[in-house]
Length: 208
Image (cartoon, rainbow, N blue to C red; front, side):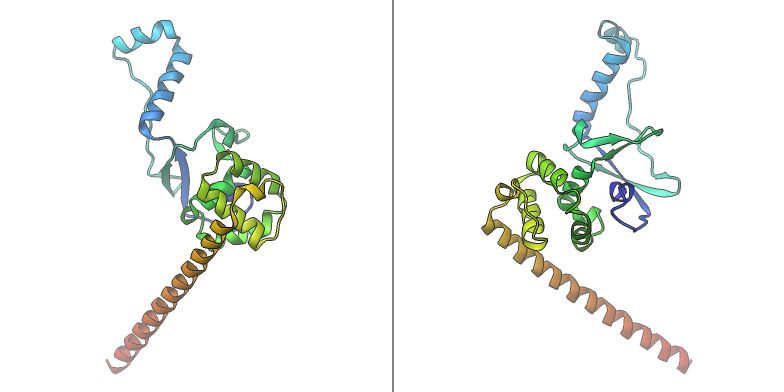
C-alpha cells in the first residue's frame, strides 16, 4: 500500500510501512556482489580473511512511529522500481504497483479497495499495467487482470486477449463474488454480535 500512497492511488493513510526485500539466500548473493564491486574482486578475499564486517540486512520495527512490514519476494527485479528523488529509497513503478495489487490484495487494502482503484485509474495507465502483467505476471495474475480490465471495466487492449482465457476469467469472477458474499455476511454477523453485546452492557449498567 505504500507504493499506492506514493502514486496517489489511495487516500487511505496506512499505519504500516510496507517494504519489499529479497529472500535471504538471494539477498546474500547480491550483498556479496555489491561488496565485490565496492572493494574490488582482488581485495575481497583478503577482506573476508581479515574477518572484517560483511554487509548485513537490518530489520527496523518502526520508522517514524510507523510499524514496518517487510515482505520477502523473488519479484524484486531492478526494472520494477523507481528511485525516489532526493531520498535513498525506491518505489514500485505504476505498472508494478497494479501487479502487486492483484498479487497481494490483502496487503493493499483488500480486494474491494483494489477493484475501486482499478476502476478509477486503470484506463489512464492501461498500457503500463498490461505490459508489466504480460511480462512479469503469473498465469493466475493474468487471469485476474484480464477479468478486471475486460469483464468489469470494459477496457480493450491488444495484449488483454492473450492475458486471460475466458473460462478462467469466469471461474475467477465466480470465486470473487462468493468471497464478497462471504465477507459481507461475516461483517453483518460481527455487527449484530457487537450490537447485541452493547445493548446488554447498557441494560446491565442501567440496572446497576
